[in-house]
Image (cartoon, rainbow, N blue to C red; front, side, top):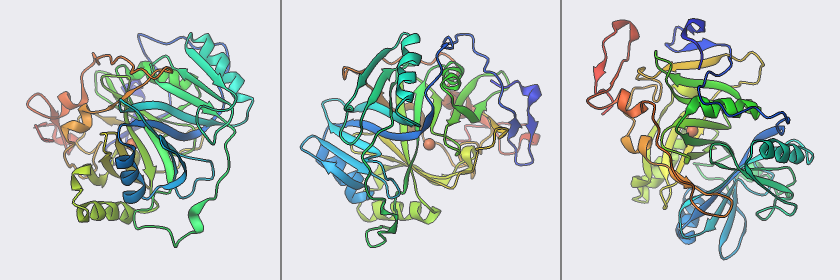
Length: 378
Ligand SMILES: [Fe+2]
């Protein structure tokens, strides 16, 4: 996406540049209508097949707070949240994502969302009373990439639990941090997301210009969502933040003590991308949940874009630990606005797994030694 001539190699081994127009041979047209002013990722609606099992995982193990629940639905929030929920778990037949939901700056922004997506020819629906409890006037669309996106402003306010130390657990999840989406053509997706008002903070590329993933933000952190190259549209993960690294270690200890260490898919570790400390879990339906802490501020207009070489063995894990293959291949289905699973389209560009691990891939720890370590990450 960024020409290699325009990037500067840092002493830590990644590259920096200023955000540049995206080069894509299959662009989604830029609408004339202005995009809605998005504040942040706000909640995800997940369909789960066994609500009791999911309640046990998200409430009893991970400690999310129950704002409201009924026979078929659970509304959960993190410690610092003051809007109604960050996660809706709804019982259904097929485990999938029903909505990636963003909060906008004012009620008027919803008119902009309708105009923006109508011009793109998308399925656009508006519900003045919201699609779920606790949230008012909302717009849902199937976006040009096939993802169910939602926009809302009005939400019931609930108590921020930050001062309720009597209720906190060692692995306290304090904020919703980001989504991660799987899409076949990352530059095409990023160009559309820039039109929607997102800024790129980091990406992974190779010398030929193939883009494997990109991170984009509205709030001034590394991301509100990321686009990961792969068969899609699918949901790679939803991520909650903790305050400190030790909170993540406490979650691992707790899962071990519960004899549920098989819920840990990858980590704990330190990311190269985002510099955050991380852990990936799989919920009872296989939906992937990341726990994450201590990325960095990105709010200045000239914030440098960080580019990682796909062959840099420290991009996904700063300590060089292997990325398990399931992390590259598994992801959750997403639904259209009628609740039907969206068809999944294959990625045609090289896959990150194929070029970095296994017999055909290579990765390096020190670029200047210029010799790939075959199969280093398996
Ligand atoms: Fe993530």
